[in-house]
Amino acid sequence: MTREVGLVLTRPPSGVDWDFGGYCYGVEPLTLPMPGAPDRPETEPSADLRAACEQIRAIGESGVPEGLIERCQDEGELYWFRWITGHQISFAVWRLMSQLLDDVTEGRTDAATATRPLCSYVRTYCAMLLYAGSCPIDVYREVIRPSMRLQHRSFSGSWAPDYWPVRNLLRARPSPFSRFPELAEEIRLHQVVHDHVAANLVPDGKSLLRQSSVRRQDMRLLHLFYDNYFLTMRAPVSRTTVVAQLIRRMVAIAQDVAVNSLHPGGAAGSGQRADEVVACENGITEILAQAAHHAAGSAPRSRPGVRSVSLSRS
Image (tube, rainbow, N blue to C red; front, top):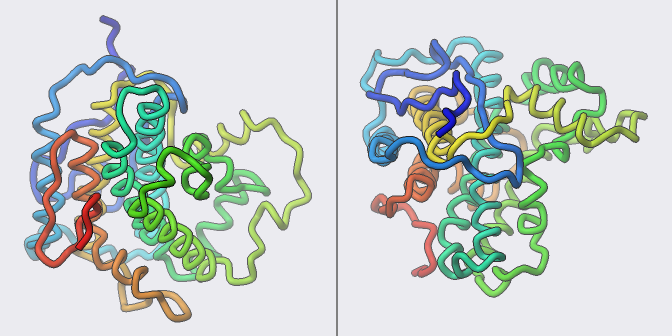
């Protein structure tokens, strides 16, 4: 069997200390197959990934021992970590979502079976919108937005390669899942969260794409620009490798939120936040833990007091 591409960081974290990016709040490159390309055959067992899923939940329940991981004192560094890593988790989750959609379309599974993990993945994407978009508006204007413009003056989230296979689902277009109200509710939440983050970061509604006069370009090149900005490479890797990279990032985010909180200093953006947005923010670690279990192929359990994303709702 041909070996997978080298230099893909897949080792699950081994403890509660920081084990990502080489130093606290450092970023790592992500390696994914091309959208729609099949996974390589599995190359390693996933039992250690399931143990890492429990580590995410344990951090949410007990936090991180005092003094083990320092708080980030550099706003630019913290929010750059969140911007890159939150987006990378979204890319991996979109891939898992698109594979579920393909499984249903091609008859390998039924829509009812796929709905529960899909709900969890959509909720995780909502959480990552809030996490990546947690930066104060001045950090967004002075650090993040200029960095995107330097990559391309029309830089746009619509260029994300992994978004296109799940675009219709997230836009609530008719699908085999339209009869499941629990998924429709998660998709509605996605729109509420998206609008909330956009209103906080770009209150005038003028995105780089809208401001730029550059319009016609090769979409393949725009995909490449987008991947390059978010440190994402394309190579044939197994599903286990994708999931291992996903869980590495989830553990690091759980540690960040435990140590720094989602809104350091209590700044949560301008305007009134909807109760469901606040609930998503407060439940971010549990949301990640449930999605990690689905991705690793183990049944998630709910933490007392936190609603599980499932087919049966009380």
